[in-house]
Image (cartoon, rainbow, N blue to C red; front, side, top):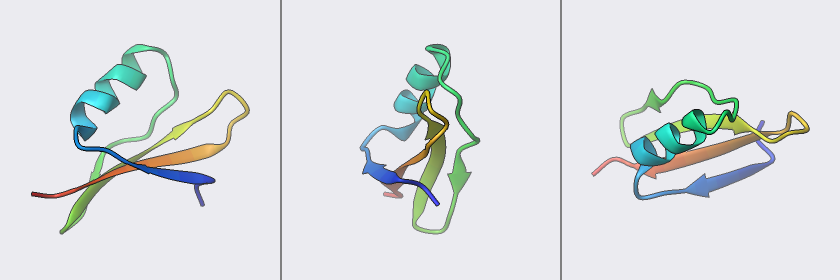
Length: 54
């Protein structure tokens, strides 16, 4: 379970930004009403980002 969950309006851009900066990330998962991905801080804590589908 993530420690913190963030909402964004540009999940694809954020995903590419964190991935290109060497941050450990999971895959983008698409659900019926939102998209999400997990990423990890330097201590290995899981964090989540999500965006509602338009």
